[in-house]
Length: 498
Image (cartoon, rainbow, N blue to C red; front, side, top):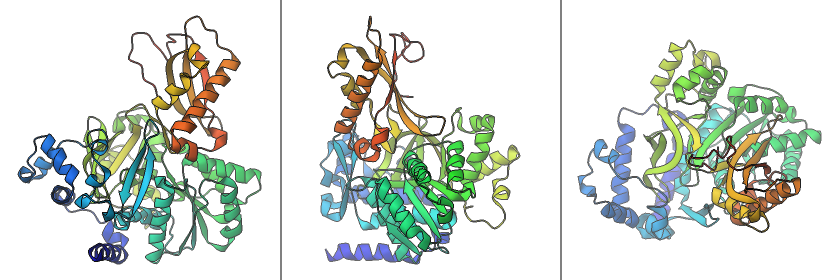
């Protein structure tokens, strides 16, 4: 126990003593890969499940000596690694006691996945929050009320965020944290009561939920501009039009310095963050879709963030992302199934220069937020899940809703789900359902299907039940004839999400 205490104290001392400039300095060539290789060696020595995994794949860990050897290691997934071993065996020394807190995320059947970690694991993630609070919000110079609007309880977002913000306070930032969670009335109460006592207020939560908070506040006469509100967002890809609209409703300000999105997972915390530089670039790409298509190879605009490869080393595999990082469950070449890609700092600036855009000049001389870190772009899950208010909506959850009586008699079981925005940029869950042959859809059927799906989502998916406000839980169902060419074309492998 004394050894564990010494490790935690040493980690805290390093975090508090390391300035952000040093923490985010440009990595030396090969430094990130060597750190990942060293982590691999440590995990082999200390994590029983990983040794078993390598043996099952006929990998001799002693033969892994170079970066090329590392990049040939088999990929980890939830199915081939995390779900195949007892939880303790995934941790160092095969003991849960090496961690001091456990968070939960929901799987596709509602069966929870547990994520143990220690306080020491939080410091790398706290640096990501520090990057946003320092570079985007000048929170080292302004008294700041950080309002955590993620769901509280065992779910990973709320408690993790609160802990990381408090770590910044121990480092000297004038940040005060309050945790109303996802209670809109309580959020508005604490903002109006405490906001005037701070120079700025930062709301941390899922984009559609925070927009709902802001819109509700407007109807109640909340003077948002008086509080100089900034936003820390996570869990959703949103448009630059959405960012501009929400910024206007808060009172305007500078889009590149008024909000920042986190790219993270329950598996390993925050992996990357939007920065003033990445937002500036994304706003340019949003206005120049042909350039975005050339850069990303797709007509849709992904989240664009920067990351520190020394703490989370990204790789790509068939247009999806892998990462290596230390945590309560350390992960080596973990396949997170997010579609995306990587661009080095120099390559990104060179590409933009070739197209006549200089983001540093656009931001202004001497502004914070320009750091020589690589970029990661993320479109979202490559599987069939849809992210909605930060909850992963899985096809299996919806399928069960369509299998209930009397719904099952009306439908084929095929559907397509999408997370959409209406004209006012409010998010809703759209589900197109294929009717059975000979069935003519009615409003009563549509409403009954929507209620059945919502009920099963609440029952099976704890993230949906706790993250999604009740007013947004009922999906908007549309009914379509068999083999509708827009949603259910004949002879084509069906996809359950868009």
